[in-house]
Image (tube, rainbow, N blue to C red; front, side):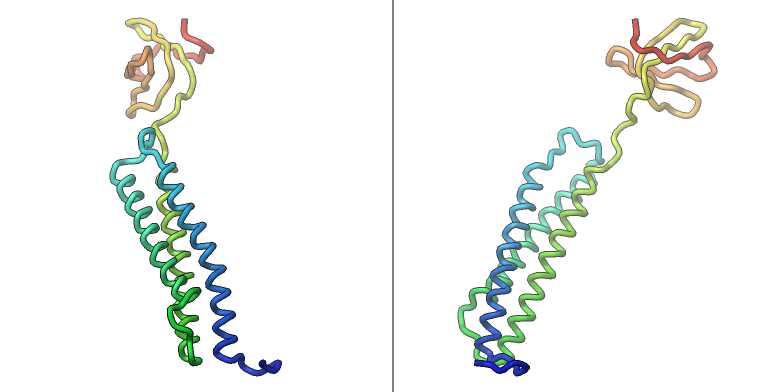
Length: 178
């Protein structure tokens, strides 16, 4: 029994520390599940990110998974110790391990967030709309795309055509190509 204002005994401090660690352990398992889910849902088939960025993102996810597993093990040693702490020093070491495990959990979540930013890589320029382009050699109609300087690009029947701007006599937006 402790009196208000008095330091808790090692047994009382251990009980509080274990309860806190067990609560954090549940949160860590949720983080581990989230990391696994993100890894499963990540698809590079339709990704527009460069290959090097996809590799870095994959490595960050694996590092987050590793750190999460280490953090879970560290906190588990506090939540379910093999030996009961017998002194204030043992309780302090348990608190230190709990803080370390919590920090590792937050680092793992941060690494996962950093890996997720690779999915925000800008994709190829979206179509600006359909246009009809007249030149001295003929007329073409298609989806307008960004081109090199002095050139426009059009997607016409699954082909990309490049037209020099100085060759265009008329260019106008259309709702559909005929």
